[in-house]
Length: 123
Image 1: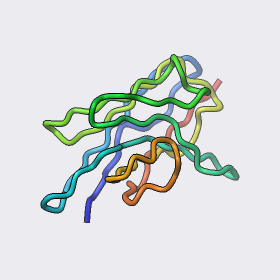
Image 2 (image 1 turned 120 degrees about the horizontal axis):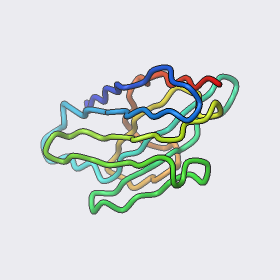
Image 3 (image 1 turned 180 degrees about the vertical axis):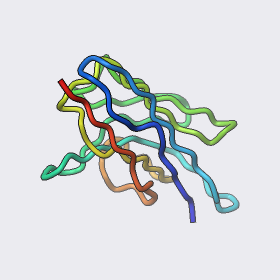
């Protein structure tokens, strides 16, 4: 069973920055992760896709974070990152890492999920 563990969340002020990390482990032999992504869920709202990355490095972003967030992956460390700049109060949410062999991009159909890391942005 693939395990995903997020870190890097915290509390920042409006306009601040954070860098989230997600380490993937316990990869089954011959299992290929073809897409990884970050999702977020605020209280009372549905989970939404934030950013996704393919093995070839192609990226997809939600309109709400385009130009402010950057997703990247270190294949040698099996680590996914999300650099978040110019944070706004509306970015406040629990952020989740997701992975799958299928290319789900920003659709929440991923097989593997982390437990999340909280990001809080205050005025």
